[in-house]
Length: 362
Ligand code: ACO
Image (cartoon, rainbow, N blue to C red):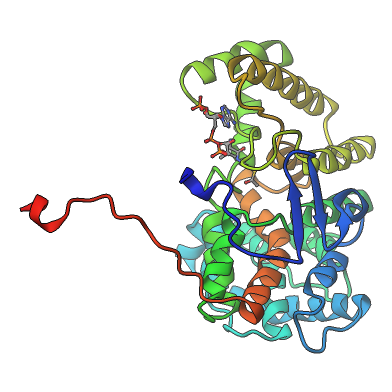
């Protein structure tokens, strides 16, 4: 048996397909390249279709999600000093645990709204400010940035966040989605599934990588230092954050979608051109050194590399990046949890015992 369940098919899904050899991601029949550029609500609508009674059309779903943001904002009052002091993703998880465990559309929309509301509110509280109430008339991306900054975002920034939320909305049976499906298979409810998923997401081998990508860029400082710095990191046995993937053996298509969004932000003057030049130089140097050092293991750029630049430009602090990731992936977690609950069996694999037998242990 391969470690980490590599190669094991553990679920059938209509939601997304990750083709690791071709570097293609399909979400409900549509290639990522076609979806990136659409609002987050459009992809949530696509993912939810068929899994909820009374799912309205896309425009009505946008309004219902706005109303859900207003509903969940009430939970921000329970962010006490301990919760505010937690890393933002843990703070979001703590508030998420207050949500009702249902299987209905309202429970789903509350979950979908929650990280978009809780993350900015916790960041403002941490900075000594007051949370900004949601504006139900806005789209989720624009409202999240508004709740972060206290002012309506530039259109280019809202568009970039939409691209990000769509790009990370679903991705096959990744670790957090698998965690969500395991919990959903017990019929525990959507909030329980989402809590399991966000707990899996926060690890640095999954959704916790983009913060460390920026730490790496800061440590490298200038393009000329990239090669030596990366070589030394590999000599120390470290992994280069933002590179490598369990499924992709070629470039992660999400990296290109996000690189496009980052370049659009740069064109709108929202990213320092030097920062972008450094990132591109580090990416090129990392790909070259990984090719030399790991010739048998194709290691290419993954989604987290340009996520880091994009979320930094949007004004999120790096320790909140995983909470923003959860805002996008929540749509996928909910859809997978519903798919599992509606059509799946209890997930209960077996382990192979390799410990001592009673007579040997004596
Ligand atoms: N830098 C250096 N070497 C690497 C990297 C990396 N980023 N990724 C894999 N390798 C090497 C491993 O050291 C190992 O080498 P070895 O066989 O000589 O020991 C080989 O490639 C295979 O590694 P595994 O751990 O078996 O690969 P796995 O499929 O389990 O790992 C993972 C995938 C966890 C993403 C890995 O590539 C990694 O740690 N990357 C850095 C962290 C990161 O960017 N995470 C975000 C992933 S995207 C997402 O989850 C949203």
